[in-house]
Image 1 (cartoon, rainbow, N blue to C red):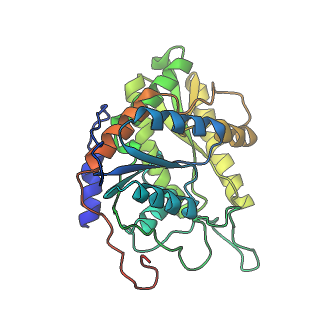
Image 2: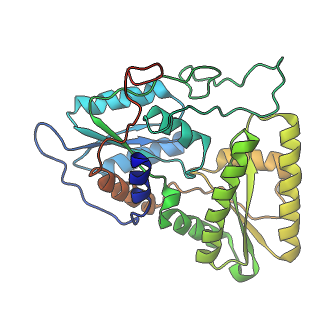
Amino acid sequence: MKAAALLLILAAVPAASAGFSNTSMGQKPYGVLLIAPDTGGAWRTELGAIRSQMRGIAIESVESYNDGTAIQRALDRLRGQHVSKVVAVPLELVSESSTMDELRYLFGIRAEPTQDRPDSQRPSMAPVQSKIKSSLVFTGRGPKRLRSEAELVLTATIDKSPALADILADRAKALGRDPAKEAVILVGLAPRSDKELDVWKTAVTAIAESVRVKGGFREGAILWVRDGTRAGQQDKDRDENKATLRRLITAGGVVAVPLAPDGRRIGQLLQRQLGTSGYRWNGKGVIGDPRLTEWISSISKAASTLPDVRQYKDNAPGGFR
């Protein structure tokens, strides 16, 4: 519970820019590890720009949430730069997600791993497997937790800051013609599990309402897409999303914004599910907005004052090694 309370403190940190003075010789106070989704070249370019702006601090980035080996290697590289603490900043946009649950497991905050797999799996069907051998998606025992001689802190996600709603509201207003008469929809990549989907929907609905208020829109709503789910789940998702879009269209214009760093993959899945009519969309996510870098700077500096958050780091089965 102590670690959870520390993370809640981080959630209240405002998204203001902050300077760094982590340039001492020898042992450095802390380094930063950015853990990002794998969205290709645009995100890779953005990560490079963020690293270049955060001068005077040891910083590494990993371009895939579910590559545990890459995360461990990044930690090792930071330790090689003589940092005494690593502040990991997950660039996941939704705190209630299977991605965050698995990162919390890897960082020793969560006792049990999670399994992001489709529901209603028949015994004869093979579990969903990732193409990445070190993926966090697994079928049996949990992956080994991360090793680090330096202290570890995993920060809150950006949806706990006003910065996310501010960015998304501006993206939506750029598409809108008369926001007071229009609806704004957030479109996100949801968990495969229906149980986890319900929790995710609640969290994203709250973000959509904040975007609606900040952007001055008539109504806020959410749509979701999922990759690798069962046919029955796909049909149910399509029916629910169609009903939502149909209801919003009858009342006025609709703008749709990806709840993602880059909206290309979500746009492909959305088009496959609902087509392209009835809403305005340009696929522009949060990357490219300077407020993202400002939030990373602010949250990492605030987290650098916190103690190691690991609760599970002994040599018991499944513990740190």
